Image 1: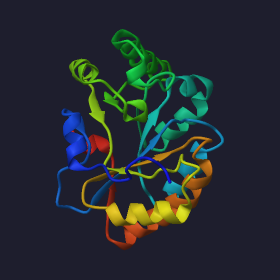
Image 2: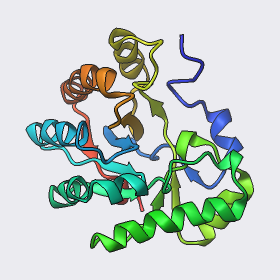
Image 3: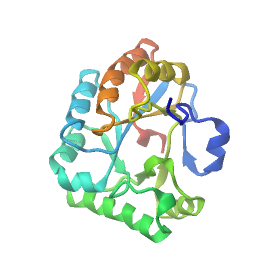
Length: 215
């Protein structure tokens, strides 16, 4: 089995103060997010599925992928989805100097600007790995750091679609920030679990919201 937690416990959230893990609400709202795109093999499929259910989502994008696939980036923007910063090369904050990490964020921002999109100042650290000092500095740069309360695990070959759906349904709650991945690595499990999870949320009267609405 995968060695990660599908649901982020409260004690873990305290390790990284200043980050948005979940939205504080009693309403049945869910914030659907996707990491690691945009890529032509997967992202358009996600866009089509979300359009089927009239859902808008937040996509945390890798700058190098924006550079390689600007047409897929524009597809997200033109369809009303929110696009946000996920560094330029999907780098682990633990493995870079602080200055190298900030440059990764700036490079991704510049790639968005080159493609006609003004950075909305939302940032998600790749792998969720970031130093407390980096959190403070990135916040000072004007970014809201968005993590998650519900991790699908669609990237893990040790999981099955049934296990993922069981965990997602079990831990769904008002204000959930849920993460899927529009990447080649996650493609199979993401495609097998996303639509059933969306239908479950609708069945339970959840409303899909954009992260920007919490700011």
